[in-house]
Image (cartoon, rainbow, N blue to C red; front, side, top):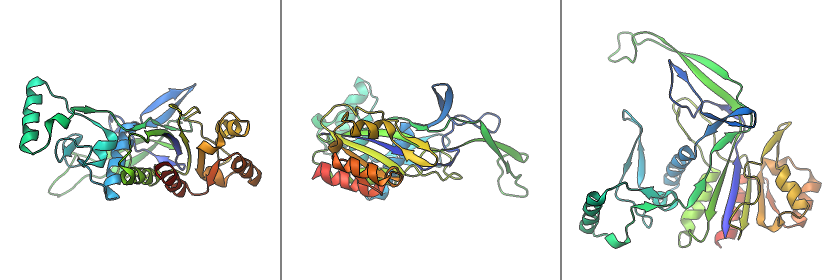
Length: 305
């Protein structure tokens, strides 16, 4: 069985996924959809935050982000081990090594009393994700902040006060994810915790020192199916008059395009529905819940037993 989901965050100001700065201008990364540019957050940034959330929820994780280095840096406790570490299991790995280095690594594994025959230098990710894309087009909004000059201090970052130019977007983001539940067999507790982590996701991307933008779901749609594809628009959320809408999915379910019993809707998208629509969806087997976090727990129980 496969699990497909799309998360929609709450709308909030964001400046937290930036490319290279140019002359103190922090540039938000973005892509063109249709005729407009939209801010994005990479799946790599989301996965990094998920690792830290899994660790915070008590699961063993191999990789740690190092924040006090001169460049982007991480540390692994040991060679990847999908049986021992939850982040290795869900995120996969690539150990880039030539033939000489491979022999050295395999010999090292023997010394550590690990079976070298069971080790792989590459493992695909069990958790699949795509970019988080802003619902609203980027409006080229910017804010300016002032960095003061350090005077008579033991250290200083610049010889003068700096004017910081920061691109900002006020928008919600949506992003899809997918899991093959057969790949998660034997890791029920880890998978339950992963879904819980998605429901509480925060601290995604850079600029953590200043920005607070939650990537936890305000609304969520999940499909549990034997199909190999989601089969619906995985970027199908819309916001109209502050209401969260899923027009393509809801209409498709009510018209028989999708089997309602495979769908779970949670959060604000349910709160914003009229009672008749909710009852009609329940009649064809859809499971609605006003809490996105509670819905993910329900999906975990149903999917994993």
